[in-house]
Length: 409
Image (cartoon, rainbow, N blue to C red; front, side, top):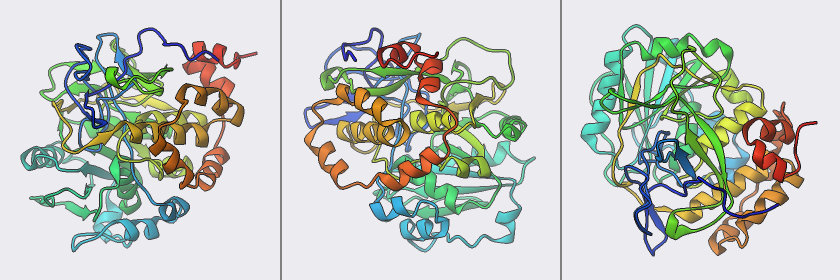
């Protein structure tokens, strides 16, 4: 297949420095080699993962992705909820897999991931959750992902878990789900705002079994930026232009009237799913590193496993855009996550064709891959498959399906 640049593919989120790190920013301007950014719309580890390489919108703004750094021990133990939870959470407030009666009676477990978040913003997020969910029995679980200053949560109804070392967003979200006691799981970032009845409106649609997202609103809840996202594929690597090869996203900016239309991808940092559906598809990846593409990976697996993805258009949830990540992010992390997604999700012949776009692989990425066992996670993912590669790419990336010779019969 050709790995020539694909027109309109936005390369990135944040700004690149010669040290190989990314910092997220506000709007994708492409004004120079160190000033690419995004007005992201995704879920993040608690930085702006909503700003991401390979993300674009019709307004020229970017969106994002996330990750986690699990050891192979955790990867092999992905199906053991209590073992995973106890191995990754530490400190006096760490929860175990034994749920209290109140936790078990909760209708929804809301998982908030935070790393080096502004304490006032995190507290506003928690206050907003409590103020707008009075009609639903909830539990709130805050995962402090190894913040340099430990998180402190004020107010009732919050369980705090501190990771002794950062796991990344994927890892923290996964851990939160393992510790949760409710039959419905929701994940939000640590810098969010909430409209009235957002939770009730999303709960109406959990019976579909689909992965749900809210529309992506600005933090002031004045402007809706998108309703879900489309997959895009970037074939080039150019760090100076914030481009990495692999899956990106494009905001769906056209308003929709349906209450819960199907969309290719979640974005917006507020996601929900029934626990049984989430566990059936394996949950967030146990292999991803620090930051990058967890929305793409989770959404693709939701489709391939038959669960699907929907945007609940009446739920009003805002996400705070900001000018920098509070911790370093490397392009190597993103490329590693991209390769892990390819090798665990798609058929071998498809992977071989797509990986041409990553050649040569960065040295650090090769090293991580050589020491990471993918077989167990791949077997789990493939066991859930309901769509073939041909069906997936023909529906969501028809141009790429033609390049890969995966056209529908």
